[in-house]
Image 1: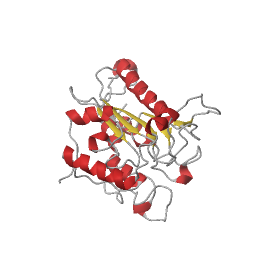
Image 2 (image 1 turned 30 degrees about the vertical axis):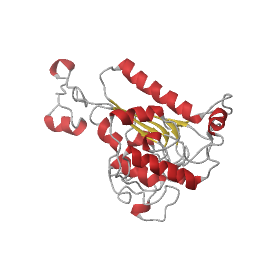
Image 3 (image 1 turned 45 degrees about the vertical axis):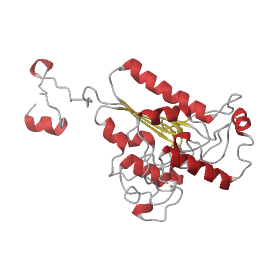
Image 4 (image 1 turned 180 degrees about the horizontal axis):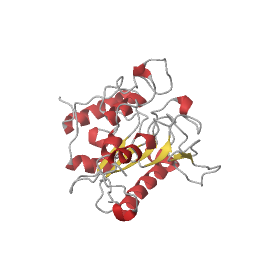
Length: 278
């Protein structure tokens, strides 16, 4: 085949296409491979969590696993978020100002302007897309809330869904919130999880955690050196305020003193921890 015809019929092919196999030269396009020693990345996003709601930030609520991480890492004391779900997520996953990322408001309304499109822009790559293009396995679990209400169906435009924005795997819910004991609509990839009844004792946070661990384990079993990016976006502690019965019982009575007293105690603890100045 002439060079002109080969370029026309097989654009980008680096080998040679001859009349028969014996006169052809094979070629394999390079696949993205992360450099040796590339770190794994795990982002755990707790929805609507208050600044002082972790014990490592002054809370009376025991959060030992997070405290252990804080003890060997760093605790930021001068950071900013957008106090809304979708804008914060869009900024986190794109590195852009929320209006540049099309999320000046939550993704439940589209007034007809680019900064309030209610979906991630097609021309701006997400963190997952960048990492995927550089050899990472990419996984998302939990709440998404980055696409329009009109696209939350099998007939909707999926360009702002997780798999279309750089994630190899996804398990969770696309809307702003769901029932923690009986989620109304979970997705695996681009497909609805068909469930009429959840088992007794089902709790969404446990389900999401088990799926996140399973995703990591499966990647590791098949490629022990490939780095992974896990975006674990909790449904908690966003409404509805659903907790397990034993957790409710464990904290019963702790807040009878009221939030004014609680604020004073948390502030005193934050001062002691050095989280805020005296």
